Length: 303
Image (tube, rainbow, N blue to C red):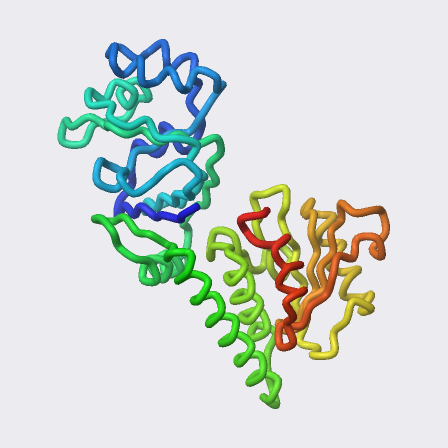
């Protein structure tokens, strides 16, 4: 799976039509007037409703089913895993039936279908800065279209270097006489970036009383309670109880307590007690091959 981002500087009317809410497929198929377009759209008939977008002819060449596409307008961020692409609708009959306004009278030729789309409103200057930072770190491959991944080999090497850098930052913070909880949270953010989560879409700060909420729109969301205590352990019952209260309120499956170096993972789907829920604990500054294997469960691609 690759991650791509399409950026629009202004408001995009078409997004309100097919990204803010799904399209009823029976109605869509019944409204397609062009015969060739109708034949292409037959692949959709087994679905009740879907979301749709089109990134244009050039950008469409780079994407495929299973890729994650992030669409940024001046007021909203949409993201979804691509279910499929209907390529070569040269007459644009599908886009017309969806209700899209044509750009310069040109048809939308490669509609993209999604089963689910997440939406986040852009309401603050900070959010815009976060998006700009994401774009700055991406690789531009077409006009306003960015690839957020490298090749697997490059990505592995990059992740190893990021983990090494993170361990060095942990060491430096431990040597500092004074440090804030926010500095510990910064370490935790880097750790979840290492696991493949996107910032700011999937790594959220200060959600109610929750320090950090990971994967907020998923049934596999993770409540993270961050402490400054370098001696934190899974026996710190006050911290665990606090995190569990937040998890129960938000419906999160997973609970993590951490100081940025030490992590204890709990899976609330395992048994009824906290003891049964305990999954494993790791220390990034002393990470083993077995720890890396355990962490695979919490990779973004596995949740």
